[in-house]
Length: 383
Image (tube, rainbow, N blue to C red; front, side, top):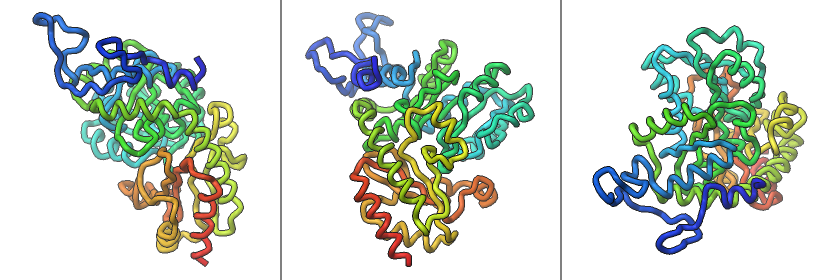
């Protein structure tokens, strides 16, 4: 099936009994009747499995061209589950530009348990061989990355990891499975904050992990069932509903992002624009090769690296909403240094080029002319 058909039908079927409901019902139940001790109808307790969650897991895995999918209470819960595949003493090579919450989990929680994280600019794979040791068990990448929109060549990473028998995990949140499918490029596990583009309406918090490998699937399910970081059926229902328009929304997100990236690139108050669709982007060719489109996330830097000016610019906006998160139908704007990446030290912010002048936009699906006009008016008030 083509993607637009797959998101409506894959892993889903009308409720056969008792109503024949076309849309997957919300199975708001914690437990299930058993015919006799140990003999159930396929479900025994909703931490282990729930029909609404199962439908979502089948649907999400299909979108990523995966065989096995598991959903969690948040994107961070999904990441935590994946890390639990490893053991203390293991080393993880990680791209240095990642979501601040992911960095916090790695640096403040898992390092206490004797996990070692080696952060590197993986836009080039030249250093991988030198970074890799006998203790290296996983390579973790975001592409496009948060917030600098760095692009990493997934195939080059997976070619290396397969050769050295290392797991590759790709956080595909910014791209969504509509724009790229890392499992097809050799990744072992794909993870999502489904809160973002999959849900698409800023009304839920949910995470997902998908794989094609049975042994990883078995381990992920054991951890999910044992640790219990699962989403409720209502959030699963909302995610299923959001996914049905993913392809339509992503087309508009990408269209609007291009218009805004071009506008910002030509504005005299803007120093630099970060969007993979621009030919000036360092890895534009890689993005063009592995992505169907360039996404709805745009970051840029004002020429003056002054927090006061940035705050005034953000406060002047009327259509853009100053808020964390991304991927909703509405346009959101944020200041990474003080918001999404506030947990990073000043040294790490400087190393990752997260300055006070950096602004991140999650471009929504409004009329692009209205969005550009809103930005333009805010710029004019800075003069």
